[in-house]
Structure formats: structure tokens, C-alpha cells
Image (cartoon, rainbow over all chains, first blue to last red; front, side, top):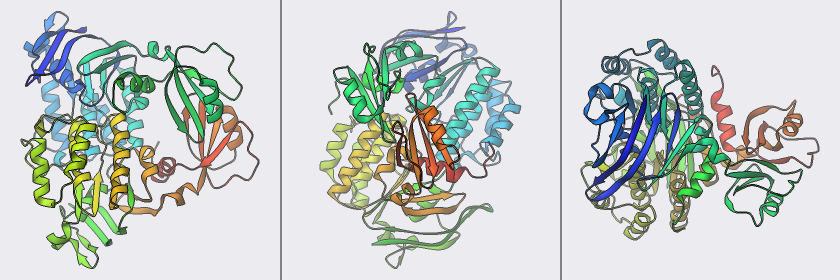
Length: 285
Length: 285
């Protein structure tokens, strides 16, 4: 099973939100869909999931057009900021409604997650905090039988512990049953280790579409005491810089062709550093 | 000017969401209001801002009860997930409406922020992405003349560049006119340097309420090559651990009373590490 997106455009009131998107999502892989605010990520996910019509182009699942077949849409699930059910429902009722639409809801897993995330199934959705609304939606997204699960900002409003719990839960769910997850998030560093493939979009266009490890091979992270790192990286193409507890990491493009001093560490480039450098181009500072 | 919260309780359907909250917010300071999902942060902010009634207790501004005086409420502004205006309005119309309610809207600053964040004032609010909805609300919160500005999850859905831009903008606004900001966020590490005072709540109770620097004095961060850090910290009270680019930071409680090897760095405890350790107690893992 494979989703193929071909020459997709979307205009809103003469504003080009998506321009010539060519992409594919394969079966059983975890993708990161990354982009700055307003890049077009949510628009793309909404078109794939038949909530918006494209201006031009097609989205096809194994030869069948996605935007005019309800049968095809049964393979897809989109978790997003929008709520498609009445917010006066209880959490329990929302999961029963989800089961009616998608079938084969994994109640055993749902009950486990309800306990781990400390959810009260009798609470009404509209009474929940931002963080708990996200948690309730995440549980649904992990328990539906869909082959393609799209998660638009899955950790919105989640505290650090709950974010960690979600990442490990996602991996556990994936190992139990391999399906495709497409994750759109702004907390790139936290999610980088989960992603097999990365799609970076900017101003409605695909800038990069490749395995995550390809990006980490394109540069290095040099870490150690600030002065030593800066002296060593001098003359290299510096992409970014970060400090933690008195130490500095500098991100550089390309490889290192001189001996590394004992007090420095050299590791692969991080996805977050690459992303910031790529999408920052031409920005006024 | 000072807000005094005294013996505040809030129950929803026999569930105690806030229990015996005693707190004060002074003029011209930047506070962090930290807590896990469901701790009661938003409920507290909604009571202070007269959107919810307390079950018991009082919120007083300079001797005047906050919950029964509209005049007093004019000193307060709450930016939160809820939208109090019709979402069919344009951004520009929302700012004009905000000016009608709060007076003396800082249009010059608003225009500067609209340019920096790349906002289109003629766009309708309901058509915006999650990130841009947050940006539009942030601009309003920074341009109202209120003496107390409460920001409930101010970076919800913002990309890394926009988060950085917001933090520097907040500081610039504060330097231009000192007022009180109370910031509730889950991205503690990013915001820690901005906070003068920290209030940590957990399960409806205040766990900690002190200057930020008091917390950083209660422990240390030891950073360096993983093996060396682990060997050195062995036998110490370890609060947490983090890695970045091949290096490890271990957070410990208390002071270090032995010589530090040359390849390690010792710096103050981070707020994030302290928070996680404090609010994790008793959690099943």
C-alpha cells in the first residue's frame, strides 16, 4: 500500500498555500512532516484526508483516487486540532463513536493508555484542558485500525513526562502492528529518533524528502568546552550552535578532516539543527 | 499593586481541582506558573481573571475583591486557548475590539510584531493554523495596557524560530514598560532564563513558590563525556540525566565536595530538571 501525491496545488483566495507537491508515503514507515508555521503542513494533511479539496493534482492510494472514495478514506486517520465530534460527549462516548466510523477499535490498548495517562473516561471533552484534549485524541489515533495515521501536532500542550510517554507508546504501538505514521511537530529534537523518513516543506513546496539518516550524514555536531569547540570549528561552515550546562555544541556542514582533540566529541548532525538552517534562509534577523 | 490569593479552593463535580491556594503576584515581575497536565494551572488563571468562580477563598487586588469588580478586572489580561471573540472576525477587527475593551492598544508595537511574525491582518481568525492563532493572541497580549498579563501556554503550536522571537519580544516589551507577566508553559527549559519567580503547582496545591535562582542553588549540573560524568556522580543524589551530541549532563541535589576533573563542567541546577524530579514523585514508571 502506498500513497502517491502528484503535482498538488492549493490556493486560498489567490494565495498559493501548496505548490507542485510530489510525495509518496509507503506502508509501515514512520515519517516526519516538518515545516515552519504557515508552511502548509496542515493543509496538505487535510487534503490527503479529504477535508479539503486540492486546486490541482491528485492523491492516489494504490491507483485509487483518495478524494472521491469513502472506501479508500477508511484506511486513513487524521488526528488534528479540529474536533469532528460534538464536544459535549464524554471521552468514552467519543471512543465508541470512533469505533462506529473506523471499526476494530483496540479497546485493550485504549484501557491501558487511559490508565497510564490518567484519563477519566466519564469526563466531557469540552471540560478538558488543552493537554488532556490532545491526550484523548492521541489515544483514539493509536487505537484505530487504519493503515495510515496522520498526527498533526500530537504533543500540543503536553507536559514533558506525557510527551516522553507518548513517544514510547507510539513505538510500542508500531512494533505491535506496523502501520504508517506521519507526524507533524515543532518539537523536532524530541521526535527525531522515531523518524525513518523526513519530509521538509517550506512556503508550500517540498524542500527535502529523504531518509533521516541521510541528513545526519551531511554534517557533524562538535561538542565540548565552549572555547575549545569554537577554536576547532573556526573556518568550518557553521549551521548553528547550542549550549547545555556549560558546554557548547556547534553544528557544521560536511566532514571533519583534521584530528579531533581529546576534550571534544564529534557526532552526527541533528535533524533540528539541519531544519533550522534550511528553513531560515533569506529570513530577516 | 499586588494580587493576593487566599485559601482558594475549586471543585468541579466533587473533584478538588484547587486546594488551599495561597499566592501573591507582585507588580513588575515575570512569573512562571508551572505544573503538569491537569495540575490546575488554567483553572487558577481563569479564577483570577473572573472566568470561573472559586468554591472558597478570595483573589484580591490591593484590598479590592477581584471577582466582583469590573474595574479591577481592567488591570488584568488573560491570553488562553479559549477565544472570547467571534472567530469570523479578521485579525485587524480583533485588535480593534481588544482596544475597545482594554483601551490604549499599542498600535505601533502591534504593527512591528505583525511584520516580524509575518501576519496578514486581513486574514480571518478561523482560517488560521494553530501556530498563527497563537501568534495573533500573543500580539494582543503584548499590546494591551494591562498591569497583569497572564499567558496560558503562549507558545502552543509555534515553531522554534517563532518561539525564540516571542521570548525576545516579551523581554523587549517588559523593558519598555515593566508590568507583571505570569507565564504558564510546558517548555520550561526555553523559558527558564526569563523567569524571576517560579510557582510550581501539582494536583491543585502549591508545591513551591520562590525566586528562580533559589532553585538553581539547590543542586548542580555535571556535564562531560558520559563515562566520566557517571563515574564522578556515583553515590550522589541524582535527579535526572540528559544527553546532547555525545555528552551527558547529570543533575544532582546538593553541593559537590570533591575536586572536579578537568574534563567535567559543574553548573547550577536547571529549572526543568528540578521540576521533573519534584512533580514525578510517586508516579508509576
